[in-house]
Image (cartoon, rainbow over all chains, first blue to last red; front, side, top):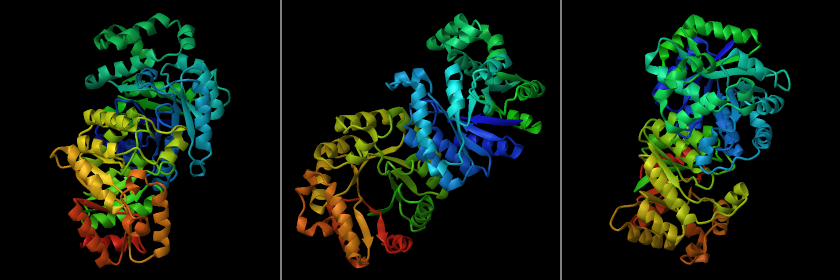
Length: 288
Length: 264
């Protein structure tokens, strides 16, 4: 089972480079760089990691096809392939809806826009060997993504949720489980992990909420995040941790990875804040 | 007079890395990377160049707020600024109108206002020098008011006028003037004639007023043997130009040209 790791542009480049080198050395299969308006843009971050590592698979995870023009996504990866060779992957998603709205970016027809973006990327000869994945959580995006792209990254951490998501695949394809992760004990990053998990919960799709009876819970989490009253997340800590976070000690995380492997998942991606703690990267790296 | 290297994203990266290293070795102070919007991605390209060099400063020369939306422009500029650790400069301008129209489907509107708002927004997010690559009188005035420097291009008479507009608007604050015209060390009349014709096509009316069309090649291209080029540069220095861009097409052997110009 491949295990990937996520770095974002919210750390210094020195720390990202060190973490990326460590991940490559210890046998993580992929590095995925996410996008947020609050963070440094993923293209320079991916470039810096490419320059600091040798051959680990590296890519966006995810980059928004609303914030970024499909042309720029294509050109950025063509530029990377030209300089560093065939070691890149592109993962796309609409992006954070609240940030898009705040920036005045019109969000319409996410599935057709996805189709257009993939078509533009596929038209590039330079990217013929670069896999394209779709970050998905809603049933329609999972279905369309699995049909059009080379695989999907599921934003779920709990086996029941993953099982439900797998039922919506249009075909047998590459599937990764991509969720915030925390190797415990880690008091320094516990709060970040809880906030990251709550953002995933807050972004839950309506069909998913209904399926698992989470409508009220999601509404409450959204309110907490809207009001920025993060301390109130503590009362949901247990549920958020068990359902929206890959967490525990080395053995517990290994066990979760094994569970996903048995379900036919191709890769588990340990999402931020896992990357903040280099001892955690080492600990999980040793058992890969 | 400082020397800068001019590169564009239409150039293969390996060639640019080679030229960037030569410029650094020849003690050039900066590299400006022009964004050809249908070629390579400018911030990715710059991130590759910064890793291939040691200390030379690098900047976009220019990128346009009509090409990327503000959050992406800001987070990209912030990323390269952090990656470059003080070596980054942001060059902004409207860009080539036909290319932007082809990309976005519309002709850029309210350009002065858009550029001013973009600079204001980026000043809040970034601690980096902002240059403006602009041409028209209102834009030059804006650059004089809000930018740290201006990248100029056009006939000699126009450059003189542009320096005057920028200096008047800057009210005593020094706004650096960078000149980026076509550059070719040596003789190549055919190429110079082709380049002049392309430059004439994209030249705004305001700049045309200040040139003698019969002398278009001399007015728009810095070209000729080394001694002649040196004299021309001295002339621009007298007009108030602080830095000259040695850019495409350079000369027959670009690496040699960068070295020869570096000893000036």
